[in-house]
Length: 560
Image (tube, rainbow, N blue to C red; front, side):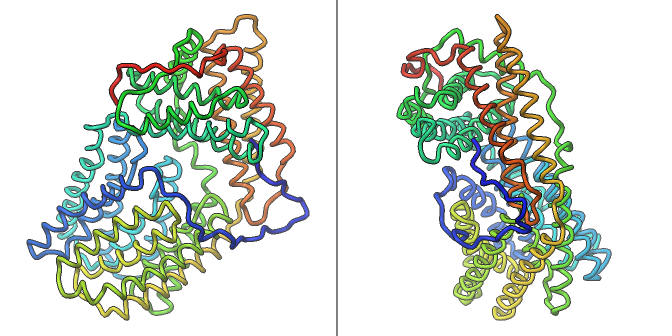
């Protein structure tokens, strides 16, 4: 599973790449879901305000509407809870920003508050693994609200508008569950099957097999997390669990797996119809006992993940503050644009942050040209203004999965058009300020990332290695028993698989830091190899890889 290149101890600093930074990838499998959801969430409140002649209030309803962007990969029971947390975070941040704006107009204080809020939002979103679009949308709303003229008597009404729109966004996010209640779980399982098929096609030794194995292991782990997110062991989920077991078998014995069978199952899962099922075996039924064991085990609290996030959170606070103050020093009237630009940069390591900086600058500068083209049109009609905002929102979500810069081409004119809701501004002024703030925010934000060095990255690799060794030893002890309890063996195997995925993510993050300590790459390779050998041994011991076990095909009478 190792794919990282050893880091020479003599290299003081890492090269920052330019090649491929703007290359377009494949769109997300569900790009249309957030794209349609945000349009459906935004349109009714915004058009209602337009009809009432109060389009100046649309920024508050947009705060609630943008909650529809989140949790599209979560099962619906889990999505309901996650969206509630997003709504509380969004509306809470808006309320705090509006109260602050009503108490002071000192731009220095407002930038400081905005930077601290951005850091807290980054910490919470990363620790809870909320998923895209993460903290950026929350920071955009709260930072922009800090610079809106306000008095305390207006705050309850404005927050109420956001809550009403957020309630509608919650309904929009949950509505697809009426037609496909197991859609997210099916998609996650299909992605795991496709990734496992790609690894099986290498027979475990072909070109790119290590990266393919890492990708497949991550996809399988993500699918298990989706299936275990609610704790409800329904018939369709059990059928999906058995399919996921076949993906794990492919990881353990790629040379004995038919990749086309896995791809066929993935295609069936993505279509409307019943859940395809593998031939049921006693061993597979016993393995599913490990799922019950995992469900009954205590979950690791999300706040335990805050420790490793300290460097990126510190980068966010420092970078946002410095970007905002640099914008003020240049006389820009909207320093929150620079602040949000800086907040959007910070990724898991410095190399990824560098790439995001380039993408942000390119996307925003192209985006201001798009705004310059449509600005004369939208000033002629409030309806055209709203329709352009909706079109930009759809385009942003449709394109951003291909590359961040391409989505930014739509996000930038949307943000500029939203500023027109409260009244027309000179297009040249908006374009100039946005372009300057983009460059300033990206440059100053990246410099802050250089200053705040993550010195604990190598330590986290050591901790991840120790965790894998511990899980592997537990599984090995069970394998040494004459008749190990199947549920205990399966639970140990699943813990080892999760630890290996976490190790690869930790190594990849540490390998992208600017001033890296020499990572124990040889030990990483050996640990991953021995861990996967142990995983394969548990599969064989559980009897899951019986001859012909993955070649049968029956269909359960289970609706999607």
